[in-house]
Image (cartoon, rainbow, N blue to C red):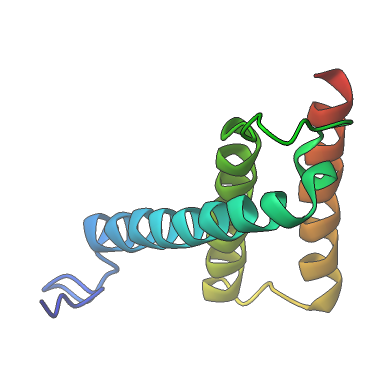
Length: 109
C-alpha cells in the first residue's frame, strides 16, 4: 500500500509518479462528473441544454466531459506543484482555459 516515489538509486520512480497521476485523474474526474451530474439536475443550462422537457432525462455526456476537464485540471495543478511552478496566476489561467474549452464545446453542439 505504501510505495515510495523514489527508486533505490535515489531518483524519482516514473511508474509510481504515473500511477499517482492516473489515480488523481480518476478520483478528481469521477467526483467532478458526479457533482456535475447533480448540478445539471438543478440547473440544466450548465449542461448546455436550452429547453428541457420534464419527462426527458438529461444527457450524461456533458457531465462526463466536465468531469474529464476537472481531472485534467487537477493533474496539471499537481504536476506544476511538484515542479514548484504553481502560483495563483497559473491556477486561474488553467481554470479559465478549462472553462473556455467547455464553453466552446457547448456552443458547437
